Length: 209
Image (cartoon, rainbow, N blue to C red; front, side, top):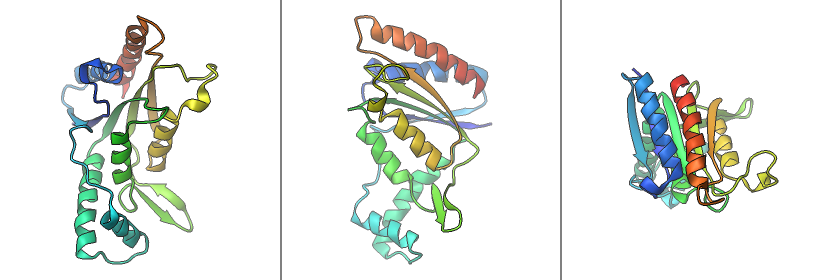
């Protein structure tokens, strides 16, 4: 039995195009993998630790091979719990809207907590940076009001999918499948059309992941 962790980062619930396509993905996934566990992490309901002074100091203590103070140890334990929970999954699904050409701040908060030395990546002068979360597939659903794909002329505005690919690749992911739900704001039926197309792609990926 495998565990799929679904990370949801839109606060719009039933109005969200990214969530709608994710729900179709999960429906097909459960049909093809009835024994697998599926867990949803709604970042708008999650209790994410603040990345404050004690946490930053704890990070630099790790980087410099120094022991933690009691305050740093407590702060780092909260970060470690987030990373351990994330790493407990075998497969991943992300859904996210585009906000100001990038990602929602709740998802950025989660990434900033997760991507830590010794937890999600390591560094040596000989090998450089190496991701520690390897051999696991991820599917990512991006919803965007406009069209930003190849040939649109707006590719340079896409700091959403570019950043997510960079983040996942940095921590070790090499198998990343993508679904683009766009453009959702191009007309009265644009959202429904984009979701319908996204659902077809989601069903295809969910059956194969």
